[in-house]
Length: 139
Image (cartoon, rainbow, N blue to C red):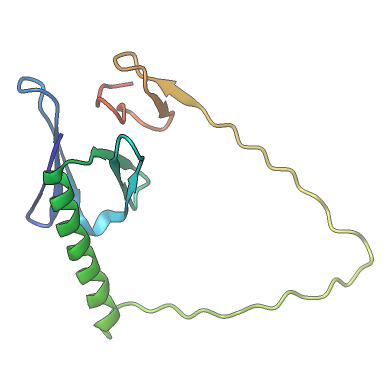
């Protein structure tokens, strides 16, 4: 798997020669970059749309990730320096005292997580994905 930065996009190339797959992610849509693992180091790139990509940690990929982080830091600094950037007014709301002597109601929330197993590589994927996170095959 090879990654590069081209024209404001992170380009991820995966697969063999005949089945090469290219994905492009606009840099402003990248939310977080983190390194995981002690033995098999991988980079995880998450986007604002909730998708995430696992990338192997190689010297070439590490170099591109450091460039990407520098670009993202520069964009964040530019937003902090730009007075015309949208700002948000935050108002603290104090909790009101209860007006009745009834105990608070307890609400139970259950969430079911469904995962699909890829038929090609056997990786577990969220049921919202249309393609496998590991090999890119359709689920």
